[in-house]
Length: 348
Ligand SMILES: Nc1ncnc2c1ncn2[C@@H]1O[C@H](COP(=O)(O)OP(=O)(O)OP(=O)(O)O)[C@@H](O)[C@H]1O
Ligand SMILES: [Mg+2]
Image (cartoon, rainbow, N blue to C red; front, side, top):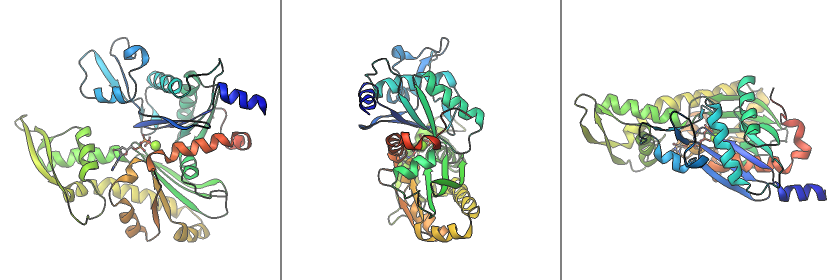
């Protein structure tokens, strides 16, 4: 016990919510200490991380789309799985050091979230990345389990609870009961797909070429899933697709909503497909307990109203939805001794 306390002091355990857009790290006993975009800036040829390994996160994200030829800003994850192993390892090494500066020669135990439908190979890649980045022991936990724990759902009880973590690369949808995921889906449709749908809409309806960053800004400033009390208008700037000359146009929230219809429809289909896989008793529970939404895309205006109207069950948005899953990993760390069997201490 004393040893554990000493070890915790020297080298605290870490919980990592490894996201496509953002990586968040909690330190046992301290809470959230790192919240940075999952982006790394590096030299193109040597693939050396700029700033002696420190051009990671916010600084690197600012460079995206604006780098000279010799430099590149890379997102090492796509749809929740690692697409660039080396870059992910560099990013995690920097962020883990930032989270726990003192280590006394120990390597921290790390709980890291993974989408529920990853292949064993994809899980292995995440496991190895975290280990090579400096972890002593690695425990993988399903993102939806961490999210529902972070949202304070009573997942150990014999009653169905449903969580949707709507992020940027994936929508993790799951029903949990008696501490197990009884039905779950990792849908590769979330915030990024919404941005891409806006890019496509603006190209089609306005003959303007815009980037995904501009589309994301439009989504956040006037985007919605359900009619607004007062509809909004903003200016969009892009390149005319015929003349290639910069041009601006006015776009309304109704138009952005029309653009978002397709990805939102697919998220809705994903949710209904998970509900359909549940036993009738669990479905009956859901009519009472409803769905809790978290993740950045749960902040889209009116997404709760849309789901409430379409599904006819209660919908609640978790408090501080961006950090729900990371806070869930902090609770997992507190119970690591008892819950060890629930995590995978080795890649499958
Ligand atoms: N106010 C908002 N309205 C709509 N979308 C938003 C808002 N704020 C953030 N987002 C979106 O939330 C997403 C980021 O959320 P989050 O940080 O939960 O993703 P992530 O955890 O990195 O991704 P994933 O879990 O899918 O791997 C981005 O797509 C961003 O555009
Ligand atoms: Mg996430």
